[in-house]
Length: 218
Image 1 (spheres, helix red, strand yellow):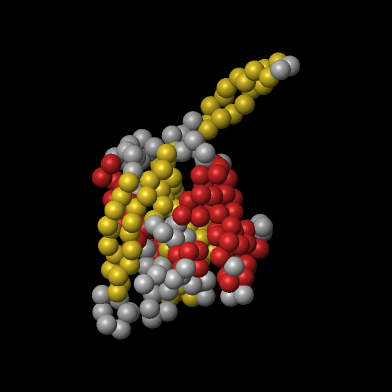
Image 2 (cartoon, one colour):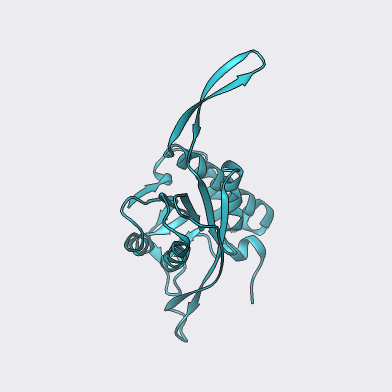
């Protein structure tokens, strides 16, 4: 699996990352969601460079223009609920893509909240057979939710290509995903953080993406 850490490059994504990490900025959910979406848009642009293209002649009012158009059949999947604004960013770019949604969430398996399991409750997806599949989830902490989501989507077919997209990842999570996906997969991260705390939250990270986007849950 190829890993692309966008924070190693100089781009405006780094400004958006600085803002969504900032505890003061996080008080405005609208701005927070908007930056999550913008990171998704820019990551989608980077992924678009890896697609297969074909030449097509487009008739203009004054002649004919030859343009290279992507020919991949795209499917953008996300993990509910934290992934929704991130997903929208990808959909703003790949506006002809099909969509899939997976409800996969972590559950603490001990009283101290230091061990987690993943439960996949719901999935709505067309067939992924032969498609270029992007799975977008903002946080790749333990990697369990992403691996479970990919395994659930595989029940509908085998994709042509696989892109894992996240905003922040850990090396531990990357290692778990690497064991679950094919060798040719690509993982895109706006940043890779050092690790997790005792409750399996990414450090320094930016907190709970779902809560920051939509409010605290019970």
